[in-house]
Amino acid sequence: MKQDKADKIIQKAELKAKKAAQQVEAAGKKAEAARKKQEAQAQKKAAKAAAAATKKAAAKTKKAEAVAKKAQAAAQKAEEKKAKALAKAASKSSGPAKEGEGGEAEGKKKKGKKKLLLILIPVLAAAVGVGAFFFLKGGGEEEAEELEPIQIPLEYVLNEVHITALPVSGEEVLVYQEEVQPEPPAEPEKEEEKDKEQDASEENGEEGQAEEPAGTEEPAAETEEVPPKTLYRYEGLKNPVGLIAGYTAVMTCEDAGFSVVDETLLRIDPPEEFAAQGSVQLARNEPKGEDGTGGGVSSLLLSWEGTSCSVLLDTPEGRVHDPKPEASAPSAPRRGLSDLEAIHPSKLGLPGESMEAYEMIPQEGSVRIAGSICVRVNIYGEGNQFAGSYFLSTDGKLYKLDESVNKVVELEWE
Image 1 (cartoon, rainbow, N blue to C red):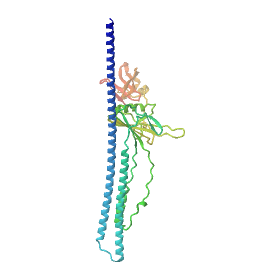
Image 2 (cartoon, rainbow, N blue to C red; image 1 turned 180 degrees about the vertical axis):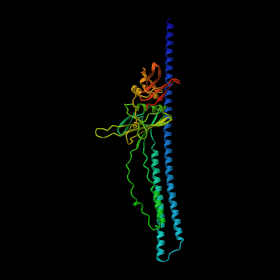
Image 3 (cartoon, rainbow, N blue to C red; image 1 turned 30 degrees about the horizontal axis):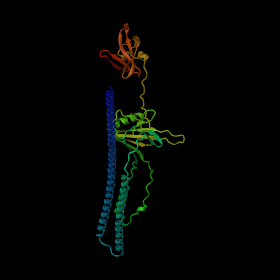
Image 4 (cartoon, one colour; image 1 turned 90 degrees about the vertical axis):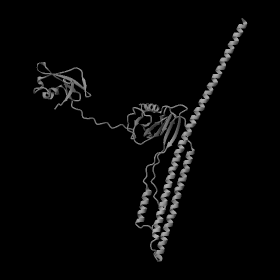
């Protein structure tokens, strides 16, 4: 018996050791799976960051190409002016030369003008080239600064006002913060006007006057600098449509105080359904503090497409306002049994000259005709003979029941 007991103890110990080994193996597999998952997430995050950097680099390259194209157009324009001036000078030199000091002075005058044009054209081309060089250099520096993902914000800050941010989470979601420069106001093209004036002056014979130096141009009017707007971009979202729809519902409740508005800050109804891509603007009026600071409007422009969305913070001018109430149509005068008693029987399709020969009995309850509540009145003639059923509505209309087709017909009071 002692041997059997020892064998059982040994078997039990072997089972425990086997179970422990299985647990160790399972824990190892679990750790390996977690490690692979983390590596996959890290690779996915790096791939998204690289794609964003590539997209930004492509945008910078496109911008640089546009600047280079503009510089090339300016240089071509300068060459055309140069060719025009040379052709004009050649046509003048082909004419008969004047003798004496007058001819010599005129030759010097033409030569001086030609030199002035030849000097100004290279200076203009050099200025354009230097501007393009510094612009491209600046663009390269900006391109080198890759946009790094930030921590998912819990709130946005707009003019010291704290606003609840989009409720997102997860390591697969990447958030970027950017500063968006507002578009500058359009300026009139002064160069074209200047060229037209110069051509007109040349046609009028003002060829001997030297061009004014560039330093004599009037300084441009200073415009007030508009601060940049803050943009948050969210990438890697599983359901951005549902996220925007839920966020809109929460922010437009009474506690949050936001409203769905159009570009004029007019309150409008929220979308019944949110499409796969689109945008919606939320805004609210901010109260002023006791010291007079604050106020204004806080605006959130929500845009979404695919697996990404963005939130643009702004403080537009104006106030969030309701649409003007529609002018209500004048209500018709109320009518009752006394009006029905005073009406001529012919208006009701009845014989006689007065309603005194008829008895009117209002019926219990009410019916709805054309959206208005009506009271039914049965009219009886001599010998308690039924004459017809009529209806008086709360908006002053009169109806008669045509029993032949079981429909009501509107009658005129007058």
